Length: 233
Ligand SMILES: Nc1ncnc2c1ncn2[C@@H]1O[C@H](COP(=O)(O)OP(=O)(O)OP(=O)(O)O)[C@@H](O)[C@H]1O
Image (cartoon, rainbow, N blue to C red):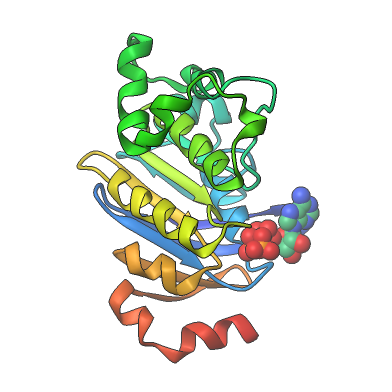
């Protein structure tokens, strides 16, 4: 579903990604691990087109999207949930969700669009009229992800979904994320919570200074000491 080939990108004159190659199949959750500044967020930004590609290619379901504007990439099925949630405090939960309509790939009624997000996060059904600003941090993160589902994305990119959340909320959130990798969707997650993320992932990559230094199954990475060492280098 997502293919990244020899990707290079950066900011101004500073290169950050140095030839990153990875793929994520439909039905998979793949986690990108690595120390601060390794280039994890930069990788997601380059895939979604927020940052331009200098070399290499990105393809979604076999279609090359390299060089396309972010809104076109979104229409082709890439949803990027950036760090920091972006919930509007003075809009209701329903209104916050419906902002995701602009990413929709096909025309659909509002009721149909809300079906998947509300079944992924059932607690939302009774809170649709509550203001975004009154929701807890964990609930806001779930709203950000639910909003991305309105476009029925083929590729869901999640940047540090657990940031600032209590462990018990993180567990609930990760359970929901696992269920989002359906037969026609791939999920790529950047995370600092290594162990929790590997619990729900099928595979993982370790990024260090813009290079992929490990690429293994999640069960393998869980037992490999080199993962923790990568964080200290
Ligand atoms: N907007 C920006 N302008 C210039 N340099 C940036 C910008 N954003 C990130 N960088 C630099 O790019 C490098 C990679 O940053 P990136 O945010 O992708 O790392 P990361 O692995 O996601 O780390 P973190 O977990 O700290 O977010 C870092 O050296 C960072 O300082």
